[in-house]
Structures are given as C-alpha cells and as structure tokens.
Image 1 (cartoon, one colour):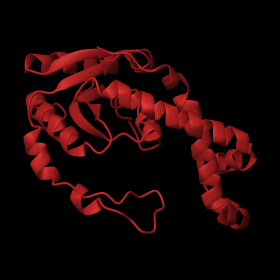
Image 2 (spheres, one colour):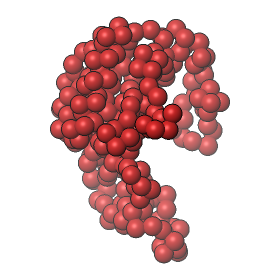
Image 3 (cartoon, helix red, strand yellow):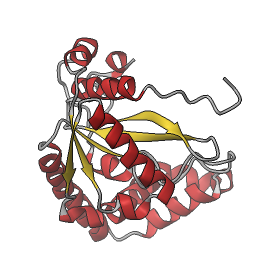
Image 4 (tube, one colour):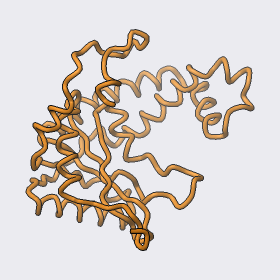
Length: 232
C-alpha cells in the first residue's frame, strides 16, 4: 500500500519527485534488532502512569530480545512544537475552508468551526513565526533521531477510549506531524481494562523502509495478541 501511495503528485506543490524505493526489500534488510532511542522528558510527564509504565516494560522486553535501548534528550524547540503546530493547523484549515465556511457555517461541527474561526483571526506574523519554529524543530528532531535507528514513544497519552465520542488525545503525534518525520504504530498490549495499547516508532525522513523493518522486528519480538481476556 505504501508503494502504491508513494511518488510525486503533480497537484500537490509540496510533493517531492523522488524515486519510489522497494519498501518490501528494505523491510527485510532492516528486520533485525534495532538501536532504539527512548526520550523520557514530556512523554513520562504527559502519559498516564499506566501508559508510561507499559512503555518502559515494552522497552525492557525489546532489550531482552536483543535491541539496544538508548535514552535520548528532546531538543529545546520541542517545548514550542505543539503551540506552533496549532497555529499552522488553524490558519491552513481556515484558508482551505474559508469560502465554504462563510456560505455554510452551520454544516461544520463545533471543533472544526472553532479551528476555522481561530485561523481567520490569527495574525500573519504568528503564522510566519510558527513556520520558522517548525523548520528549526525539524532540523533539531533530525539531529536527535540520527543517534539511533528509530525513536520509540507511547502512541497515545492514555489507553484506547471506552466509547466513540473521541479518538483520544493526539499530543504524541504532534511532534512527528510538525517535523514531518515518518512514524508507525505497533500494538504492544492491553490495558488493565482490556483496551488496546501501543508504542510509536519514528525515523529519519525518507527512511520508511528502515522504520518498517525495525517495527516489524519489534512486533515479532513482542508477540502481542490484542484479543481481550475471555474472547480467545
């Protein structure tokens, strides 16, 4: 699927005209014990106690299976990546929806309406500053990730939600979205309530094959079954 999705899109000005690699072959080449970076700042403080304890257990299990676990420090620009991402998201959301929103505002849900309205009143200077910070943050994240094969964090702040009112807090996806680095989520167990838990792996730009190979090895090493107790 990734191979089919990859490649230049002439309708997307941000699309890069790069050769599409053989991801299947690259996965096989990198399916071996990886060097895994584990940042503790922010994630240990933001995740629920259960999620962070689970993440540390996963790291230990991967180490026991042969992976090398390296503690990493987040770059200073990490502290501002969430606020910068919100500004960019609101402004670009407003730019895309502006005409339709003015004609059919009632068709939008409350969360999207709020984002559009915030974007419409955001000063241009704030948007430019946010984009500058994103570029610096991306460079800093690349420098951090270069120290390892992949970086591992919790996939979510808490276990899966109990109902369909929300898909959960996306706070742990923002750093990767903001920096543009590729990620993949690997199921890693069940919570005390039998709800899915997972860890997230990130890698350098254009190293999706390496990322997927490392994630495949980790998934095999964990051997996780997500079938809730009593439903085997």
